[in-house]
Image: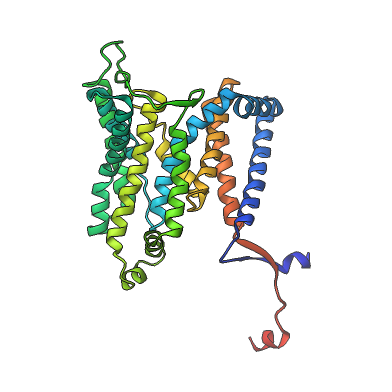
Length: 360
């Protein structure tokens, strides 16, 4: 008992990536164990459910295609949030930028005619430009008025959602098939390379690596990192802090808009109200899991995609949506707790000298 009393937790300033990884693996296993106990108590067979998830998610071509399709928007929205984190800001509006990117790409697809490769490039540019345009007002408000970007980007999500609902069920409604909740099919599609998996997946994989290299090996990247670490020091070093902030925020919006464009041209092929599937909000969780690492976004998005895919499979096995969300939240909570515990170390408290005690 006295041995336990002499132990205490001490927070450490720097934690290695290996320690974080170990903590997350342990937390993931612990979350699965707790989830299995709860499922067993509710009358389900955890072993059977786990086997079904592995078999249908990672053990089949169809499952891998689904994972790739989920990964594509998650990587890009996660990267959009991570990009902003590099200058110490938060982009909670990736969902709205996703919608506007999808909206802009659909506009090009429905109303502009031309050769498919050229039109896909045009859709690409329109999607990125749409996302950047949607974050322009929060960017200027933050850069020139110091308005909290969390509030402005978040509120614009709802505006974008309502705008897309309006055009998808109103002016752009599919009048050919009579569908009332979506536009007509966009005639330009991203080419597939693995079943239903399209080249947008490759673009999504390249984007974090490219941004990571730019951040690490270019003067621009150094200035971004210094601006994020200490804006005042960056200003005194001659770095145009405001210009770098504007650049990064617009880039973040463009990446999220690109995710919307790829969803339209690669997966859904039409604009509809719920096209984002909360990918923008999930991107925040991916960025938190990645801990600010652009390449780590891929791993964070992969974990999120597996969890989402497992949730879909569990629903086919009889679990309700609420139960699936609870299990997903359990895993995320354990991961967050593990991240915090990784920053602490158990040390033995040194005994207080008797002389010091007497003096006190």
